[in-house]
Length: 292
Image (cartoon, rainbow, N blue to C red):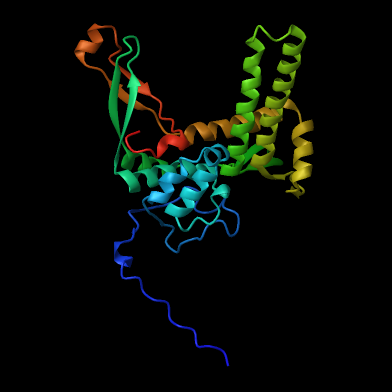
């Protein structure tokens, strides 16, 4: 006789556990998430929780930071609808980071920068609500018309692709810096430079290949990845340039807009410009440190 299953005990501390702080809509609408990587909601709004103490400790693990696992763990912890954060499309990525930061530490985020010319360091506050509102409006134009009978379709890169590319680029850039090392023989420098240049070129081409998910020729639809790769490596440079320019323009349009900073009269008397733009660039590994 099978034992009768006992009902799960209700934790009396449940009401003291974290609850969703905000809800966001993803610019992708869930379209670019592979099956099983995102639990789609009925109203397209996704709950965002604050980080736990464990989540903060995860960011102190060097290996997890280096390979991106720390960020993946935190995204899945703070947005339970995300089942595989490695598959997160780039168009949703910044929005999710900002939402988790806001849910954990509040609407304001203090940042420091130096005023041009006078190099005076000042602190300013970012309103994360404003950033979230803007990022939720991000758009992705997937069609690139090479001509009326040749259409290329592109998708956002995933966090997995972005992470791997960043690591490859970092390692290659380190090798390039060695070229300036006087202790290295000249023939070795040339070898290192050629190798690094080749790797950077391959990274660029690979990103284009990963971005293309199908091509319509007017007669047939091609979605075989190997056929697409062969096409990218052998197509006319003008075609690849058009695809690359389209992808780069999408990235620029969806990047966080710089904020305009106005200086005081006293700072202007010292030579500072009356106003200038400050680019907003987040480093995911220290973005969640309080007081950043």
